[in-house]
Length: 182
Image 1 (cartoon, rainbow, N blue to C red):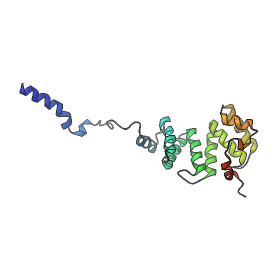
Image 2: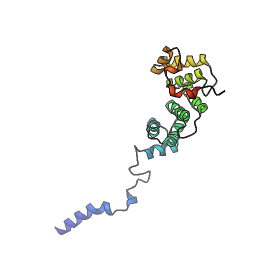
Image 3: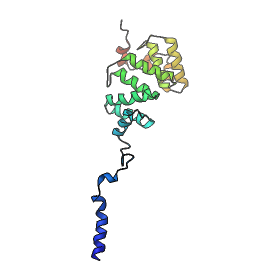
Image 4: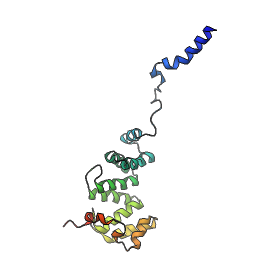
């Protein structure tokens, strides 16, 4: 009986006494992080983009880690995610995690618009109306805003219904930003 109990206890203790390297899969990591910020950044730094990793950029920037968000959004934008392009525009337009750069912001929105993104169309159209970060072209700006409205973007419909008056969609506090520089 004592031999059976000893054998039973030995079997129970065997995993705790085993070499930890014997528990790892030679083809990868045992129990890798799956839903963590570290995993998102690891994927992004490898150039692996997917919808979940790109969407995590929103949480990252809202938590105030703008440089990290830039890394996510730029990688995702380069991979063709238009939502990441409009977020890069937002970061550049507000100097978050980098310099304030209206030209770069407008270029990101232009790329998103060219790829068919309604928010990109609206933002780039508004920039064209104002001549903000690009040469002013009211006709092209209105056309892009109309396209965004046809894509059912409510703010674009609101701007169109207000006869394309930018004050309808932009707070007064931002007027300094859109004033002519000369």
